[in-house]
Amino acid sequence: MSQNPFNPFDDSPNQQPFSPFFPPPFNQPSPFPMNPPRPGGPPPPPGGGNNPFPGGPPQTFPGGPQPGGNTPMPMGPPPAFTPQMQLSSSQSQQGSSGIRRCIYRNTFIWQRNGNTFWFFPTFVTSNIILGFRWGRFGWVYSTVNRGSILTFQCF
Image 1 (tube, rainbow, N blue to C red):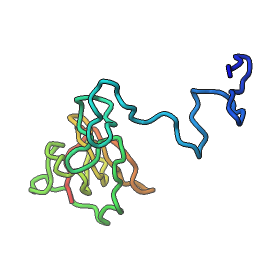
Image 2 (tube, rainbow, N blue to C red):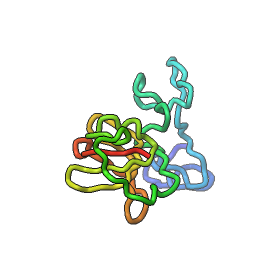
Image 3 (tube, rainbow, N blue to C red):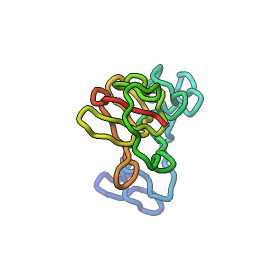
């Protein structure tokens, strides 16, 4: 049966509106596979082949998930105390160098502008730190500019 271009319904038995561009109804599987086979190409890499950048970053980082993905939130609130700033202690660090050792640990941050807060870093770049900041309503995903950090202390 050929489809009439002026008929908004397809030739299906249910006479469903025809639109190949809209997703299937909520309770039906998609007709398009997430990782279609590549004709003549290499098979998808182990882990499902969801990496959109061939030869790019690994699917997971050692010690945790990839940033921006399903980054785990801290399991509970930070410690119930506010630490004293100790610039000479071996536990605290001046500036942001060395903060990579605090990934997935409760970290208290003192900023140059006087702000202080608990932070749970999950990923560190050369300019920013990604993670969760503790506030009035619990943990909130946030970023911290590395240049704004006066000192920090991991727990």
